[in-house]
Amino acid sequence: MDTNADQAAEPSEPKDIPVQNKESTRYCWVCFATDEEDTEAAWVRPCNCRGTTKWVHQSCLQRWVDEKQKGGNLGKVTCPQCQTEYIIVFPNMGILVLLLDTVDSFIYKGCPFLAAGIVVGAIYWCAVTYGAITVMQVIGQKEGLSIMEQADPLVLLIGLPAIPVALVLGKMIRWEDAVLNFIRKNLIKIPIIRNFMPFRIEVSTNTGDSSNENDLPPLSNPVSATRVLCGALLMPTIANIFGKFFFDSVKSNFHKTILGGLTFIAIKGCLRIYHKQQQYIRQCQRKILDYTESNISTYLRNNRQSE
Ligand SMILES: [Zn+2]
Ligand SMILES: [Zn+2]
Image (cartoon, rainbow, N blue to C red):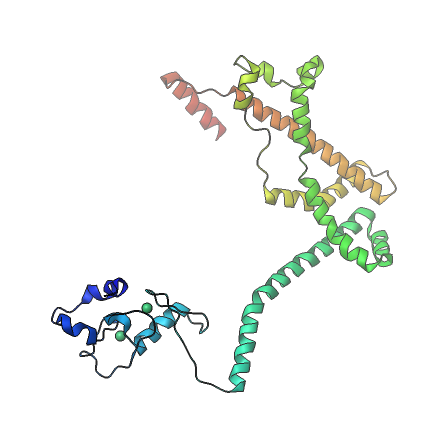
């Protein structure tokens, strides 16, 4: 007997069926019923399986196929044991049903693409709108509008959405890290700068600089996508505010905003470099204390103060 058939038949094999009778007794491998138990049921042998378990009730197999297809009546179903594909046929329902079936499957397959297209389109038009607002913000409302009216539509459709993309890409340039790295590596040798910012060589309690370079806390924090996005998209507004605040005497709105933006970037960069360096020093100077009475009480007191 086939080993596959054994697997399905064994668990509920009735003891009272004689061995010589086995080949002629039909088992349903779904409900485990035999010919004698259900004389009315329709039987089918849908696959290559041999032995008693090649048989299955038509209704049991239908249920099993439904379960495999999970609602949809498409898709191939195979025998779980011999992997034969079941021959499933449908009655001819006429041209209208066939047409409706085709339309249905077309919509079913097309919808994910359509939805993706709508999302991409929505993002694109948001970017265009953002670009247009930014142009007006930077150049001035009237000037911006007149420039956009005169411009070639194709240039606008490509140029405007490129504005937020360029802002995000620009925001991802981590120039502060490069500057800080440069300061740490080179300017450290200049005494004035050394006095201005305490650098790591003074900080280090270990000896041998080359060996402990690897133990240093990482230079850059991990990039946060939301932070980059917010920072990039708020940039024109901040540049505008800084321009109005610091460069009000400048006539051209464009120059004003550019100057404001550069000022903001410079101030923020300096603060960031300073903050990073201080965090870095704090990290290098941390210590873990002995668990003694006096250390515990000092620690608790400090914690209470900082809360
Ligand atoms: Zn059955
Ligand atoms: Zn089979």
